[in-house]
Image (cartoon, rainbow, N blue to C red; front, top):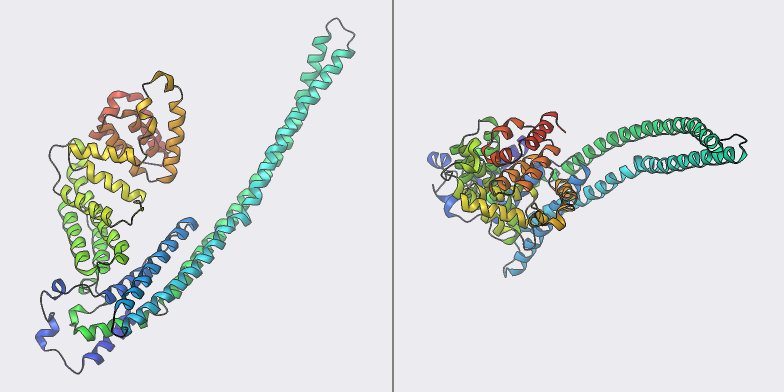
Amino acid sequence: MKAASSVLAFTLICLCSAAPPTAAESLQPSDKNETKKQPADQRLFLLYALEYLQDKPLPKQPMALRAELEQRRVLAERILEHIRNEQRKKSKPKDAIEVEISEVYEGYMKAIKTSQSETIRLIGLHTKHVKPVLQEIETAKREANAIQQAVAMKALLRGAGAYLGSNSNDPLADGATTAVASLIVDQANANEKIRSRRDMLAQNLDKALASYRTELAAACENIATEHHEAITYKREDTVCLVARLAAKHHWQQRDLPFGEKLEERLRDPFAVMTGIKKRLNDEKDDAQILLKNAKAIVETQRHNVPFADAFKPFRLEFYAFAGELANRSCSLELGDDGFTKAGRPKAAEEASAYWREYQRNLDKGSTPNPNHFRQIVLAKAQSGKAGLREAYGLLQQGGVVPPTARLRQVPAYRQFIPQFEKAWFEQCRRTMPNPYVWFDFARICAQNGDQETAFACLDTAATCRYRNGALALVHADLEPLRRANQKRFDEILERMRLGR
């Protein structure tokens, strides 16, 4: 990155040497409000976006890696299509910088497709290492059942033979004694054989899993490294493109794009977001600071992200981050009193507005990811009593509240509902494994009078390894559950404490 910045600085000096700025101009932009007045330069944003995607780490898990690469591929295709459409609309000759930017994105797309092919091979490692052993284990289970049946049949035949050939006064007792003795001896031998096979297969599975994890980790690391190398080979070309834009617009020193100091990159919304994330990681949470940063994120997004539909995914990211910050601000104000606290948090209106904008920018037919769904529901719940009811409605629409909730008091269905709802929440847990999601859902359901769903959500949070039992013990939102069934509540708290 430093090398890239040096190339850019040198290029800018050469390009701007014909008209050197005055001392005053070198310290400030030519217009103090230039950044706000000027619409976002689409070409510059495309380069910033590419740098952001280049520096964004890839997941280490194969399925998450495949999903992330697919998401990036779709985004790159969308941007390329937008650039081509823009070029077709223009009557004047093609913009040389836009042409080069599209070439850079095509190289990025090629790198993504290569990484996707590697990821598919990576997922196949499970088939190579683990699947054969799992198949052998299934075969062993069938063989064990067959052995047990053979032992029982053998004992039965021996008992029948003893019964038929007995000369005593009680042939039935002779037959039964023979059958039981045969069963005991043969069962012991069979159990030893089954146990030996099971232990051997367990060792084989451990070895297969160890080999799989080792090769998996190495392969994931190689994919990430190769992907990063493939998409950064044109970084200096990208820097030169930015330098040409800077010279064309007569940007001054403090406007310098791709500078080393994030706070100097006034037109880069990704730099603003990265800087805020870094500061928040280094500082203690404060409701006012969180709200201030949320507003700053939305402001930089409005001024620097182009309005075209191709850039919707980026707007979603900014609104989602701002919405999360505003929700955190609300949570800090509410504290352990939760939704029962009188009055609205200061950030409630902003949180609701940001998540509305998020939903407005979703593509038709798209749905929020589980974490964003949780944040949307929280924004509603934290906005007051009416919002709390709306939040419960969203849980019903989102399939968190099972469809059998209204039938729990109907005698004809009561005996079937627990088994159905257990399977329902098990499926939901696989979709949303974040324990904090389920803790928040339990609070919302409890405050809306749906205690059974609230208990199920709290139990799912414990299954997902929610550890903060101390908070659950005193949180005001869960008071209806403590009053309804203290024993059941304590059992869930114990599972949280034990981590199972």
